Amino acid sequence: MKIEDLRKSSERLTEYLKEKEAEDILVKTFGPKEQPAKSFNLYKSQVDTFMRWSKKHKEVCTKEDTGAIGGGDKWIFMPTGVGMCIKYVCACGDGIDLTEVNKW
Ligand SMILES: [Zn+2]
Figure (cartoon, rainbow, N blue to C red):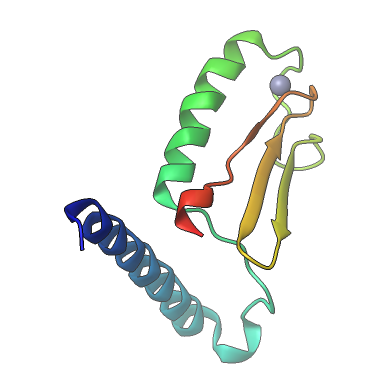
């Protein structure tokens, strides 16, 4: 096994443990019955990519502060048989594909 493979495995395990920790917090906070039936997660690398894109996009976006509610921003999660496709589309129509096929 190559060092690069080990690094990727370690990253995946770290992300899994973070997701598990987040699930445990939900159970402790709301109890098992109040958990969402389905949730979608982002890897830290996807969050970092989105934050970099968002920071640059704010300089050129044609929509003023769209806000969190009713702003027209979209997060698109498309489960496939091999992995999750993830896209973000701003209210202005511009967007970014955050799919990371290397983690499938
Ligand atoms: Zn925009």
